[in-house]
Length: 387
Image (cartoon, rainbow, N blue to C red; front, side, top):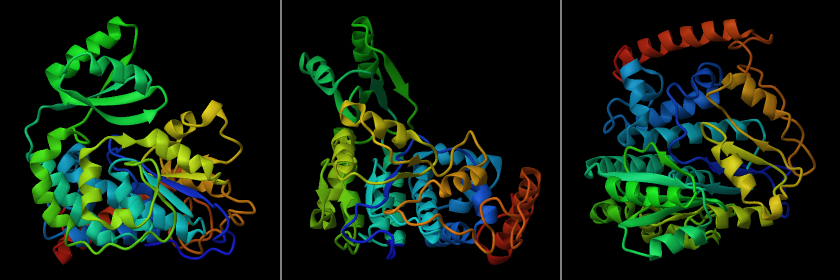
C-alpha cells in the first residue's frame, strides 16, 4: 500500500501531498460508482471487507453498498472508523495506480491512520483492526460528549476557557479562525451562549461520540492492548503529524503516540503550515469531500496558497467518476509527472472493459448490475447476506 517509485517525483522534489479526511464527511454509498468501474478500488475494498469479516457485522461492503438500513450505519462510530479507512485506502491506491504518487502525507483525526498505511507505518489490515477496536470502545462510552465549532482564534477561545472551569476542552484547531471544543452537552451549550453573546458564531457538530478529549481516558488501557501488537515501521515518505503539527519519523512507531492521538487535540493549522512550507506542487484530498482542502487553504500565511492544484477525490454533490476523471489531468507538471494515461479497462467514466466513453445513464446501469452481481457473490461465498 506504500507509495511506489515515480520517475517524475524524485526523492529531492517535494511532490504531491495527500490529505486524509477525518470523520464527519462520510455519506451513504460513498465510492459506489468507483466500486462498480475501477478494479483497483474494488479489490482494495473487498480486501478490507475480508480482513474484518470475522469481527465486524455488517461488514465494510454491507455498510457502504448494502441495504438502506446498513448504509445508515456509516454514521455510527462503530462502523464509520474502519469504513472510512477502507475507503481512503481504496482511493489512495486508485490515484497511485494512475501514477499520482504521494511524496508526503497528512491526516486529520481518523484520517491519520490511512496516512500511516500509505506511508508504510503499518499494514492496512492492522489499521483496520485498530480502528475497528477503537470504534467498538468509543461506542461503549456513555453518550454525552458533544462538539462545537467556534469561529474565533485559538487565543480568543483559550481566554474564555481560562475564565472558569467549564468542563470543556479544545479538540481541534482546524483553521486560524476555527476551534473545535468538546465536552458534555450542558457545558457546551452554556459556553456556546457565552460566545454568541460576545458576537462569535458557533456551530454544533454532528458526532456520535466525542473524542480527542480527556473523556477518552477510560478506554486507553484496553486500546493499548490492541496497539501494542501492531508491527510499526518508520514512514517511507515525509509524515506530517496533526497531533504535534510537525514532521514525524520513528516517534509514530510507539504505541503511546496512537494513544495520545485519540485523546489529545488535533493541531491541524500547525501541521498544514508545516506541509505548506514544503511547497508541494499539488494537494489531493483522500476521502469523501473537500473539507481539508478548504481548511488547508485557510491555513496559508497571509492567504498565499500559490498556484498548486487542490484536488478532491469524490464529493457527494457530483458524479464520482466524472469528478475524479476531471481532476486526473490537473495533476501534471514537472514534479507531478505527465497526465496519467487512461486505464485499458474500467477507466472512471468508461463502461467496464470497453474502450468507449459511457453516459451517466449507462454508468448507472453498470453500477446497478455490479451491485446485483456483488450481492450474489457475497451470498455464495458466505461474505454477506443479500440486501
